[in-house]
Length: 206
Image 1 (cartoon, rainbow, N blue to C red):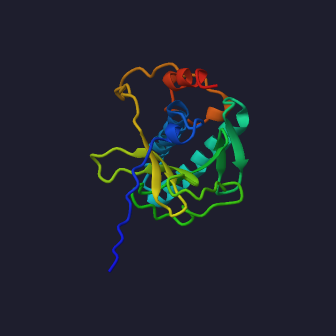
Image 2 (cartoon, rainbow, N blue to C red):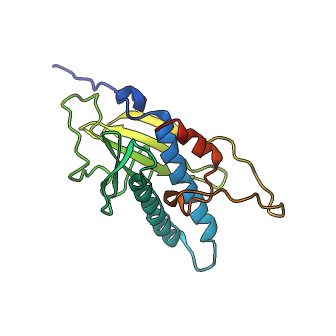
Image 3 (cartoon, rainbow, N blue to C red):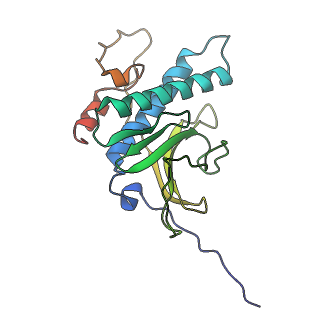
């Protein structure tokens, strides 16, 4: 009797899959998505808020931020592919969407569904045909939220994987003098946590 064994595909890094997917570009977008989540959860901490209100507001703000950034012209490599609720942006020529989910086992409805602009194809099982940013909530109060960038092949297997690792943040005591505000462009409105380091990164990625 013939026996078959499944080949386990080892994920590669995004920039090895496609030159448009540089670490600098991915970091700019991952940091923005993460900052908006942190800011929104901090703001919606009243007795009238719950995980539902925070989750819906976070998604709406992340979607608006990403859409406005893609249409602002700030980054030549970032464009808007679809403004629908399943927002899709292009990093170079690569269509990308974002979800809040478990990166090891995505469960959100529509995660693997592709829209009319999210339509990469490849007969090679080692090549990704869809790309997703996954914002993964912390599992416990001692953990941190994380952001992953994943590429899946035609069989929904992960063949590209990268984790965003934030730079060490400066902690400001609540009774300390608040630092001077940083003026942001229109596309950055509402992104209170992003700072000068992100802008410095962006200047070299045009």
